[in-house]
Image (cartoon, rainbow, N blue to C red; front, side, top):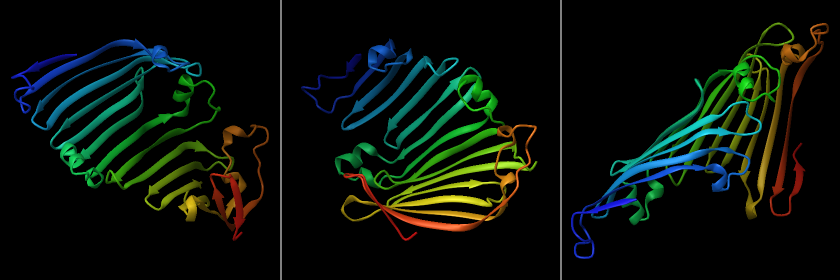
Length: 278
């Protein structure tokens, strides 16, 4: 850590202070990350003038390995702070394979808002993306993955304000065939807001099978969960991936059609669950 002063801060508290810092590569095991190999390093610089701080920092975790991974991954992140806000970017890669990207930040003078206890009103926008990747490529990294076909893609966006964030996520599994010979498709959606969270699992083209749930905060810290299952005369063979059916017996019969809904009240403290309105 290096610090430089235009004047002594004891004489002039508003003096300009600049500095930089660095962290030489340190093993993850020494930082308490048991079961992980690799090293973390960091560097950055900052400038303080009066009450305002302007800073930038970079963090890298190189050659990170886990017993379930066939090869290492690299994690990189960057942060910038100034009067206009906070900007964050980063990602996770394994060789040429881009696994995750992160971008976004907070708009507005965070330091001034914090002094006025108004940081919760600052606009927030973050995006966590998982670029389209084939399951075969992921299996080369994680050998324990099921032997399925297709590709995965999706992402999560966080918008709203620091005090009231809103989550909106969607992930998709596509580019595979089902037992009927049709194109397969599975979507998982997530929405999080001030009142609770919504989840949805949609299977098949145009979602002939949908399983969803709404979670809301009830009285005395209890949670109220309402679940729905909707099937629109969908053939069973349109729901099962062809890769999980033996090639000698891919004939699946039957049709699924109907609607079911039920509610549950959950007490996290006692783990008591009451089923209602089925």
